[in-house]
Length: 508
Image 1 (cartoon, rainbow, N blue to C red):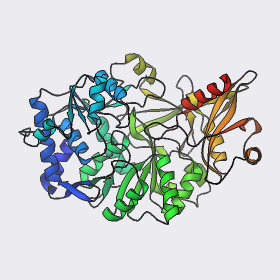
Image 2: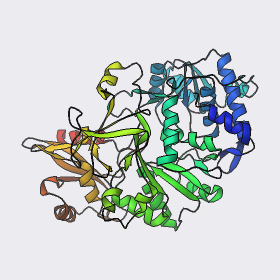
Image 3: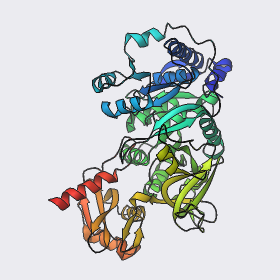
């Protein structure tokens, strides 16, 4: 069924509930939200946009984003979300690859698309065409869609080349949302979803379950992630849910401790999208309390591979609580998870292998890319490219991306293990470990570090700490101090950039 029907249903019976907010300011109730989305759907239909056609969204986090998104779905079309931090040429490439007929863009971003020669009609939110939508004849009824029809075409971050378009169906989004209620968190009408992470990514997908129950949706007035603004809005709206990358959680913890804020009004912070280091989540729970839940997913299986419950994240009594907290939890209800060898066969408990997943929330394939699809979907299983293990209780621990594993002298070294140990040192703020080419060993281990303010690098102390906690061959052989680690638009550390830095040093 059309995912947009959830908005119609809540508007029919609870149209007077507040729905959309810009900061503290109410923008629309659910009746208004649905009416405006249906007008946009009618406008698209009059433009010749029909079932299955792609419509791009190159917008910052504003309430109109959700109106555009649901208008696209109600018209039977496919939303193509593009991160607002991408360069205009990158966004234009996605628009052309998706063959989007219309692209909605925030003021300031539409000019970048025009300059890049994006091959679609570009509608700026501040333009006359967008203003005309408010007077458009609304669609008579939502367009019927099948469960396997496309709803969302999500482009991967493309850190190793051109991004791939992940085909996400109405069935996938429905299963993800229903699984959320079972495996991640409950949502209540009194709750508020706060969108401080890009709506083009996981934070935006999480709007669906909040629409289902008629909860509120708030976009920070700044349009982005600002710790002080988040704390203010959480205290104002109360019962706030938000999705945050691990780097965002760390920034929130550091900012809160500086000013003595305890995150009043924060009900649930779902974190994922990258490695959460044990020291960081322990510190966050100690400061904010039992508000954290972890999820593990990929664009190819959006937000729905595994989950570590609120209880597991906060538990300090279980004899293996550290191991569980260092995991990404257990399989969510709508999927099977396996740790496989090179041929995809299951390995023994606790043995490392590739994390594999199958179920009704796994993509049918990549957009117009059968070669990549065949490499990633094998015998019904999604090969995630992540190295991990599963214990006898079903807890999955992610080791690293397979491409990030270091092989030194024929022995596998997982960077995350070394990073976890180094981050126990209070003088280090951030750490990223990569392999450096070595003529004898193949690779050796090096670490890029960001120091806490007022601290200087003490290699002898770091070496001693590593030798006391991990095998000698895993100890970094060199340390490089940076002001900040290079990250992509979703806060993931770009290890490809770090390797490029190593090449530059070697060539000097």
